Length: 152
Image (tube, rainbow, N blue to C red; front, top):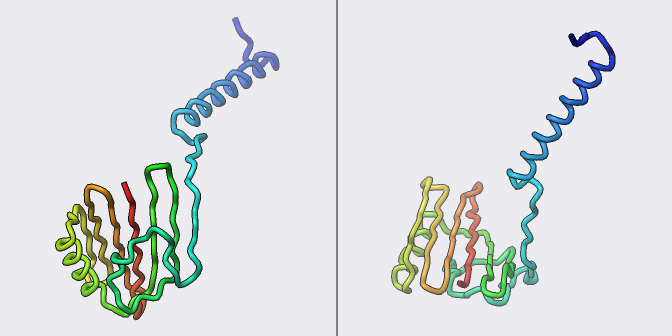
């Protein structure tokens, strides 16, 4: 019979428990993907106030837009994302309607839209060669606008 008060037995149990915990943590780490890192492509930022090369000018429907940030991300040889941000004096509803009309008349299909009127609108539109995501969020008296464009 095993003497549970024997220090050798106690240390053997403690060691066994530590090994089991280590195996469980290792399995969780491996299968959860927690140890994997996703490589993001290279980021190229445009000078303040300018559009990054490759961003379609026609996706800025706000005539008074002053670009605050514009950058591109090169994910692969066939996938590039271009993003531009600005603060607008337009209302979210007015600008959202302008984008809906633009997409409809320019061969885009709006496949997803979301709204928490009057403060938040988002539109996701696609063509056979590109995707566009437009997000408009009211912050005080200003409207933050972000447009991302992905060439397929």
